[in-house]
View 1 (cartoon, one colour):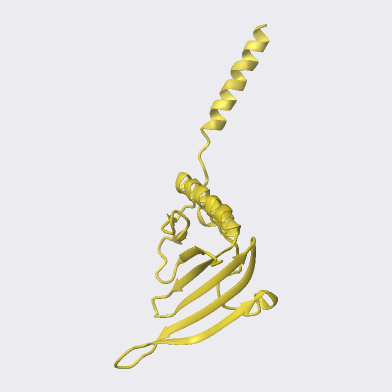
View 2 (cartoon, rainbow, N blue to C red):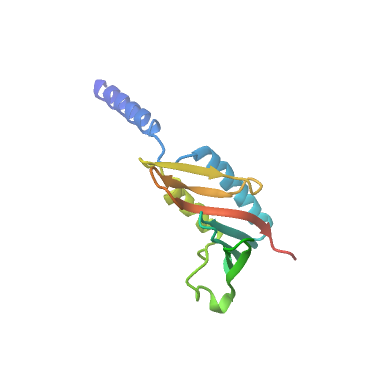
Length: 175
Protein backbone atom coordinates (compact mmCIF):
# COMPACT_ATOMS: atom_id res chain seq x y z
CA UNK A 1 0.00 0.00 0.00
CA UNK A 2 2.82 2.38 0.92
CA UNK A 3 4.46 1.66 -2.40
CA UNK A 4 1.36 2.87 -4.30
CA UNK A 5 1.36 6.05 -2.21
CA UNK A 6 4.94 6.88 -3.24
CA UNK A 7 4.13 6.11 -6.86
CA UNK A 8 1.13 8.46 -6.74
CA UNK A 9 3.20 11.29 -5.20
CA UNK A 10 5.95 10.76 -7.77
CA UNK A 11 3.40 10.84 -10.59
CA UNK A 12 1.85 14.02 -9.17
CA UNK A 13 5.26 15.74 -8.94
CA UNK A 14 6.15 14.71 -12.49
CA UNK A 15 2.90 16.20 -13.75
CA UNK A 16 3.53 19.40 -11.80
CA UNK A 17 6.99 19.87 -13.29
CA UNK A 18 5.75 19.06 -16.79
CA UNK A 19 3.00 21.69 -16.53
CA UNK A 20 5.51 24.33 -15.41
CA UNK A 21 7.66 23.92 -18.52
CA UNK A 22 8.16 27.27 -20.20
CA UNK A 23 7.14 27.74 -23.79
CA UNK A 24 9.79 28.17 -26.47
CA UNK A 25 7.48 30.53 -28.36
CA UNK A 26 7.39 34.29 -27.76
CA UNK A 27 3.94 35.90 -27.74
CA UNK A 28 2.33 32.46 -27.41
CA UNK A 29 -1.16 33.65 -26.38
CA UNK A 30 -1.20 36.42 -29.03
CA UNK A 31 -0.13 33.89 -31.64
CA UNK A 32 -2.84 31.43 -30.54
CA UNK A 33 -5.50 34.15 -30.72
CA UNK A 34 -4.28 35.20 -34.19
CA UNK A 35 -4.23 31.60 -35.41
CA UNK A 36 -7.80 31.12 -34.21
CA UNK A 37 -8.81 34.27 -36.12
CA UNK A 38 -7.02 32.97 -39.21
CA UNK A 39 -8.74 29.56 -39.08
CA UNK A 40 -12.14 31.30 -38.93
CA UNK A 41 -11.11 33.48 -41.92
CA UNK A 42 -9.86 30.41 -43.80
CA UNK A 43 -13.16 28.64 -43.24
CA UNK A 44 -15.25 31.67 -44.27
CA UNK A 45 -13.27 32.14 -47.51
CA UNK A 46 -13.14 28.46 -48.49
CA UNK A 47 -9.33 28.76 -48.09
CA UNK A 48 -9.23 31.24 -51.00
CA UNK A 49 -7.57 34.61 -50.42
CA UNK A 50 -4.67 36.83 -51.36
CA UNK A 51 -2.07 38.63 -49.28
CA UNK A 52 0.78 41.06 -49.89
CA UNK A 53 4.29 40.65 -48.49
CA UNK A 54 6.38 43.85 -48.32
CA UNK A 55 10.10 44.36 -47.86
CA UNK A 56 11.96 47.64 -47.45
CA UNK A 57 15.61 48.55 -47.11
CA UNK A 58 17.28 51.62 -45.68
CA UNK A 59 18.76 52.10 -49.16
CA UNK A 60 15.34 52.90 -50.63
CA UNK A 61 14.82 49.53 -52.30
CA UNK A 62 11.41 47.98 -51.63
CA UNK A 63 9.36 45.05 -52.91
CA UNK A 64 5.73 43.96 -52.93
CA UNK A 65 4.67 40.39 -53.63
CA UNK A 66 1.01 39.43 -53.85
CA UNK A 67 0.33 35.73 -53.33
CA UNK A 68 -3.05 34.35 -54.45
CA UNK A 69 -4.37 31.15 -52.89
CA UNK A 70 -7.41 29.22 -54.18
CA UNK A 71 -8.80 26.27 -52.25
CA UNK A 72 -5.61 26.07 -50.17
CA UNK A 73 -3.20 26.11 -53.12
CA UNK A 74 -1.00 28.97 -54.34
CA UNK A 75 -2.08 29.81 -57.91
CA UNK A 76 -0.48 33.20 -58.59
CA UNK A 77 2.45 35.39 -57.55
CA UNK A 78 2.81 39.03 -58.63
CA UNK A 79 5.98 41.01 -57.88
CA UNK A 80 7.11 44.63 -58.06
CA UNK A 81 10.54 45.95 -57.02
CA UNK A 82 11.18 49.68 -56.65
CA UNK A 83 14.13 51.96 -55.97
CA UNK A 84 14.42 55.64 -55.21
CA UNK A 85 16.25 57.39 -58.03
CA UNK A 86 19.03 59.85 -57.27
CA UNK A 87 19.10 63.41 -58.40
CA UNK A 88 17.64 66.72 -57.29
CA UNK A 89 14.05 65.37 -57.22
CA UNK A 90 14.17 61.71 -56.13
CA UNK A 91 11.43 59.55 -57.58
CA UNK A 92 10.26 56.00 -57.04
CA UNK A 93 11.21 53.89 -60.04
CA UNK A 94 9.96 50.37 -60.81
CA UNK A 95 13.03 48.23 -61.51
CA UNK A 96 11.39 44.81 -61.90
CA UNK A 97 7.83 43.60 -62.31
CA UNK A 98 6.30 40.26 -63.26
CA UNK A 99 3.38 37.88 -62.71
CA UNK A 100 3.60 34.10 -62.40
CA UNK A 101 0.49 32.00 -62.95
CA UNK A 102 -0.10 28.46 -61.73
CA UNK A 103 1.97 26.82 -64.50
CA UNK A 104 4.95 29.18 -64.04
CA UNK A 105 5.13 29.59 -60.24
CA UNK A 106 8.63 30.04 -58.79
CA UNK A 107 10.29 30.67 -62.15
CA UNK A 108 11.69 33.99 -60.87
CA UNK A 109 14.35 34.16 -58.17
CA UNK A 110 13.02 37.31 -56.50
CA UNK A 111 9.78 37.76 -54.60
CA UNK A 112 8.28 36.33 -51.45
CA UNK A 113 8.04 32.56 -51.17
CA UNK A 114 4.86 30.95 -52.49
CA UNK A 115 3.47 30.08 -49.08
CA UNK A 116 -0.10 29.66 -47.94
CA UNK A 117 -1.13 31.32 -44.69
CA UNK A 118 -1.14 27.84 -43.11
CA UNK A 119 2.56 27.59 -43.99
CA UNK A 120 3.23 31.12 -42.73
CA UNK A 121 1.60 30.39 -39.38
CA UNK A 122 3.61 27.18 -39.11
CA UNK A 123 6.86 29.01 -39.90
CA UNK A 124 5.93 31.70 -37.37
CA UNK A 125 5.41 29.03 -34.70
CA UNK A 126 8.53 26.98 -35.51
CA UNK A 127 11.06 29.62 -36.65
CA UNK A 128 10.23 33.32 -36.35
CA UNK A 129 8.68 33.31 -32.86
CA UNK A 130 11.15 31.00 -31.17
CA UNK A 131 12.70 32.56 -28.11
CA UNK A 132 16.41 33.06 -28.75
CA UNK A 133 19.23 34.77 -26.93
CA UNK A 134 20.67 37.85 -28.55
CA UNK A 135 17.56 38.80 -30.52
CA UNK A 136 14.33 40.75 -30.18
CA UNK A 137 11.19 38.96 -31.34
CA UNK A 138 8.02 40.69 -32.50
CA UNK A 139 4.48 39.81 -33.53
CA UNK A 140 1.84 42.20 -34.85
CA UNK A 141 -1.68 41.20 -35.85
CA UNK A 142 -3.04 44.28 -37.61
CA UNK A 143 -4.73 42.37 -40.46
CA UNK A 144 -8.06 42.03 -38.63
CA UNK A 145 -6.31 39.92 -36.00
CA UNK A 146 -4.14 37.96 -38.43
CA UNK A 147 -0.36 38.28 -38.80
CA UNK A 148 0.85 41.60 -40.16
CA UNK A 149 4.45 41.32 -38.96
CA UNK A 150 6.25 38.40 -37.36
CA UNK A 151 9.94 37.79 -36.86
CA UNK A 152 13.09 38.70 -35.02
CA UNK A 153 16.07 41.04 -35.19
CA UNK A 154 19.44 39.94 -33.85
CA UNK A 155 21.04 42.30 -31.34
CA UNK A 156 23.78 44.61 -32.64
CA UNK A 157 22.68 44.29 -36.26
CA UNK A 158 22.94 47.60 -38.10
CA UNK A 159 21.01 47.36 -41.38
CA UNK A 160 18.14 45.32 -42.84
CA UNK A 161 18.16 42.85 -39.97
CA UNK A 162 14.55 41.66 -39.82
CA UNK A 163 14.14 37.90 -40.21
CA UNK A 164 10.47 37.15 -40.74
CA UNK A 165 7.51 38.40 -42.72
CA UNK A 166 5.67 41.67 -43.15
CA UNK A 167 2.14 41.34 -44.57
CA UNK A 168 0.44 44.54 -45.76
CA UNK A 169 -3.00 42.99 -46.28
CA UNK A 170 -4.93 39.73 -46.27
CA UNK A 171 -8.23 39.65 -48.16
CA UNK A 172 -10.79 37.22 -49.46
CA UNK A 173 -10.87 36.70 -53.21
CA UNK A 174 -13.69 38.46 -55.04
CA UNK A 175 -16.49 36.13 -56.15
